[in-house]
Amino acid sequence: MTTISQTSPNQPVRHYEHYPIRVQDYVKFREQGFLIVRNLVPQEDVQEMNAHMDRILAGEEHFPGVTPPPADWDPDKKISYYLRVHMLHRVLPIHERFLLHPRILDVLEVLIGPDVLALQSMLFFKQPGQQGQGYHQDSYYIPTFPDTLCGAWLALDRADEENGCLWMTVGSQHEPVYPDSDGQSENGQRDLSDIEPIYNASHTDENANGLTRVARKYPGREVKAEVDPGDVVFFGGHILHRSHANHTKDRSRRAFVGHYCNARSFVPWNSGAPYEGDSANYLHILGRGTTHLPYAQPKFGTPCAANQPPAPRPRRQQAPMSMMGDMDNDLMTLTAHPDEPENHASS
Image (tube, rainbow, N blue to C red):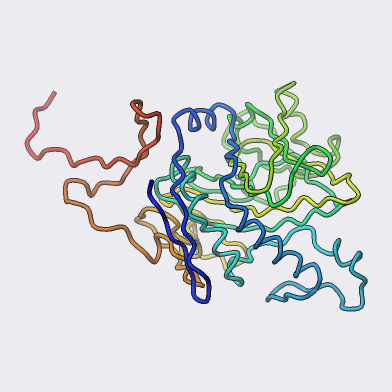
């Protein structure tokens, strides 16, 4: 079993066994639009992130761009100050390490790779009483061309129906990305002759959310993704998904979420940076593999393909690598395609 080490400046070395994805897992991801991988991230890592979140909620950790809770608030009030925080991998080493977690990249390498670009990180606190998020499609918010977006939702607490787990509408992964009706964004597939723009994506009120009518095309196929700490839910950018409010009185539903795409896709999404054209790939980190497009280095030195390029391969194996099904052992394996012979017969 291959072991991958992850370390950063001022951080201990951690060793992770490579996670092998089976052919049936790959097929399941394609068939239902999402895949739950149990026990993917070690409990030691989960506990580290939870302790970090506890310090944030207590007002003990501060970071650029985010206003901390007022110091004079009592602890119970501070707990509900945050719902989610975006893009902390650009300002905090721990978030960069989790975004580039080797075990998560192992799975993404198979599902959307083998070349993987890390785009976004989000930290969800979702304390008792905090709201959920209505039907939405992630590729509407983060478009990639070709469309290869994939989310990786790492559970830091037990997530179930009571405290607001994810719900996935199986079958909707084949739907186009619906454009909005107010023209605020150009995202969405407006070139389909009969597509009807929607309104209020992510609204928690089903009657107000225009994607509800799309979800109703799949009666009985909305599945709750109940997970335990260390489990990861992988889901494509088209699938309709949502979560409900945390209705418990004493259980949080914390999660670390990353978004990724194939590193050979163009990514115009720039997370608030100045718009400089159709490609903002130079802002995002190359997690695995190679690419002909620009990419960013990890700010805090987390090991990944951006700062640890793969070893050179023989000339006849320098074409891009692909993930192929090995039917003998039911695993997905990284396969090089040799160049075509210079002298070959014409058909």
